[in-house]
Amino acid sequence: MRFTQNAAALLQSAVATVPTTIAAVEFQKDALSAWKLHRGPRPPPPPFRVLLSVRYWRAWRPA
Image (tube, rainbow, N blue to C red; front, side, top):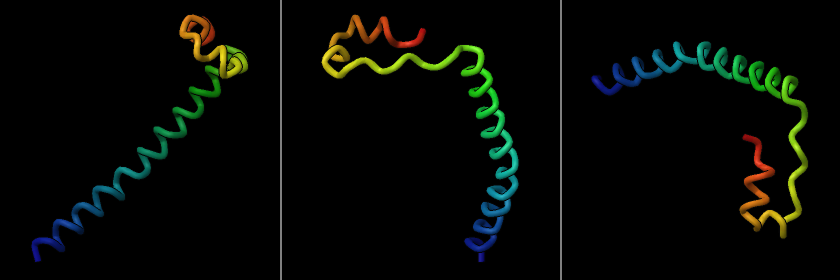
């Protein structure tokens, strides 16, 4: 009996958080697209051999 009550409460709380989670994800998507628009496209990834050079990787990696 107690398990069913716990399960019901858990389900209720999970359902209650769904809209806020969806809203948060949508907001993040919007923020990300705005940031990409502002920043321009990401530089193309370097070839694998050069990637092994940490100095080059740090120079290429966005700040």
